[in-house]
Length: 380
Image (cartoon, rainbow, N blue to C red; front, top):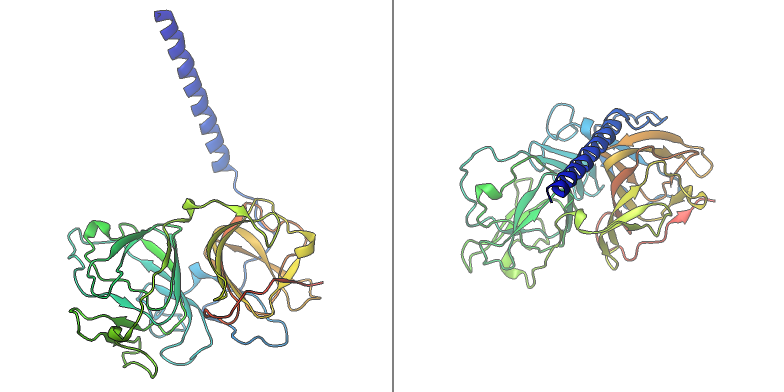
């Protein structure tokens, strides 16, 4: 019995040591074998928000590439925006052309960096604060996590506390209540929370009353009253809505992409009638595109991409007969494909290490309601 225990222990120890050695060797290979560099330059630096397209022209539009890490914070030196729409740590990297040149442009893609809780005993966020928008918005958590109260009634002061983790997705329809509630200090973000958020409207907020029967209040980013046509009183709303929430994308599996062979996707939202779709897209190391999908485009759809991990080459084309120019994009790059712009590839590998990006598609314009998303077209 003792002999068996001795040899059993020795065998297990040997297996453990062998496994540890294998892990250490594997870790050393990973640590000392960086991914080969892509043979493409980085795109020119962009410091102004990219302006989207609502009505496509008859010609061909270029794809826009933005290094968000090098993009200036709103309202700071080098920024094109005099005032930050969502605080001093926002970067407005994309805007709809609606109401350009005013204090309330409609449709903005903003990268936010929320700092962690600094006070060990901050006051609870009790009472008030519950609000809604009259426009659609969506958001993806790039890093960290946050807790958001999600009431189901305008008279509810402490709604469901929803924790949105890294890789979390939210699509919020108009008249969806959120905010308020009693959020304790240990439920607030403990680490930096980086959020990518798109607001289809002008950013106004309608707060509900603190007491039943009290009128709500309209709060616009320009500090002025409600514009014509805005229902600035929650008591006139006949039906509040609910958001679609995904805690983190690790809760779903990768699936084969039906649009392009060799890629994988995770479906986040697919609002068919509203013409809105959101996915995570992954390409493996050494991926090359299928021969029949070297160049594709949409006549009317807008497609927004945000690099979450890895690196790849993205080509810019001036038209169907252009050989194109390749640029290297990596994590924290924003890629905008307007209508009648070519998303395509040149010869060779698109990526060495692989890449993952968030991909959001609007059937028409940059708001919900465009109908079915058209099938992608191939340049022949």
